Length: 118
Image 1 (cartoon, helix red, strand yellow):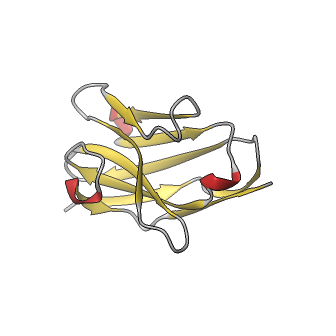
Image 2 (cartoon, rainbow, N blue to C red):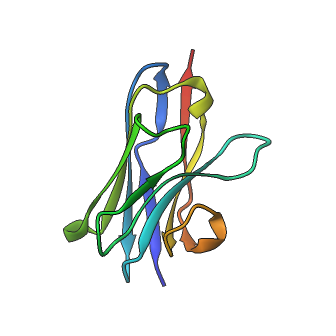
């Protein structure tokens, strides 16, 4: 069993930055970040393999968001820069097989709210 705990969400003005963190307990897997805005489906944001540094990003965040990991602390981060109001959503950390759809992932965190004001 893997437990994921996210932190770092909040309210920020457009153009600002936030850093999300996800602490994982148990076996390590590829880690991903997804987000879900009200009335919308959960969408892929970024993912990183655990045995290598391969990373993937959604086109809407590429160049603004950076995923990174700290293997010693079993933690993955999502640095979000140049935030836009359309980035507003609940952000979820997930662990499983590296992929861009939710079904690739077996474990999910509780989510952390990110709100970007214009």
